[in-house]
Length: 221
Length: 221
Image (cartoon, rainbow over all chains, first blue to last red; front, side, top):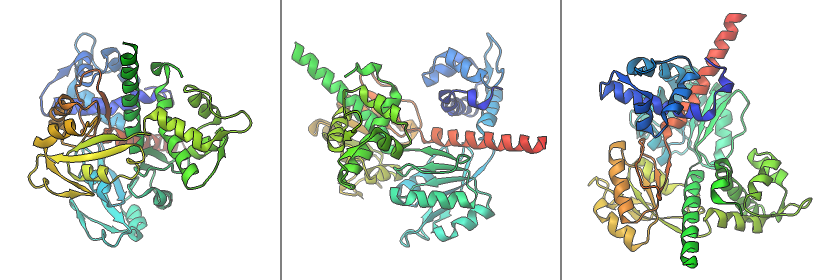
């Protein structure tokens, strides 16, 4: 296996796609062997890229035969760390927080949400799936008792930094941030920002260029 | 301005960050001039990168002086296409759909959600903010009447492709897909996949390598 830092970010981002596809092949389609061509084809990724991505982590599959679906799924799962449970807390029990708790597929990815927290008295004691929303005052205790390593932040931008600091102080090592703001955290804490406004703007950008090009073409004709 | 296709994707993804920061400086902090150093500093982006990103689109600001906040905001807004309204429909009025309608900042980015749709009778006629959830049977009509160009898909994976096809047939040109599945769409339609499971897995991946490295260190000592 290569050194972690030498593996391209794009490769790392494709691993969960491979994992989910292999899981589907294994569990629902009962396929035993898959070629890089077929695996790539289902995901819109060229087969050479599939082979290159996997080669960073070892030698899987046999040339001319393909990959054993079950074994490759297991290996990719181990690489990703989704073969174990990661205790997780959610802070912010608004619509987005509720959506995240309900989101299919987190459990499959190893995420185990053990607590949902909010400081809004109207939300405390509400149910989300099998969780009861608790006061953020109980956050630290839960993180310590349940050995929580992952924190999801779904609070307004102005509250996010404070929440992040509380999470880290109590022992959280990875933060998934849905608040539209940058977090300042120590180097050893991993942060993933899901900035929804960035997503929509990149789409609008493409749309707006497309319209501009169409207009220019019309003017030329 | 450079050719659209020669501009790096990473640059395009940073533009909304610049825009939001400039908007804040302009509206709330009443700052007139900002240097690339200050702008970059607020976003964790090196000043050389800020200057390079902006240089793809023209000459802004004056060496040694900085950028006029209001003018630069206006220019970046035009580049992004957020200076106008984009009529948008949401399909899927579950928690995630509700969260998206409620999300701060979409309006600022030009997104105008004109309709929310679902095929679940329990959700039809429910209110989300100032919208009433309608039957997906009315989707096509709304898209045509309101000249809708953007569609947000927040339905389960197995329903997403069908919804995408309906949207496109009725005239949608850009799809923001929250369903954890790949969509097959014509080349001229822009798709942005917000695959939440990919987000969390990349975080778990880092966490799991970190723990592995710590364990190895412990074993060595």
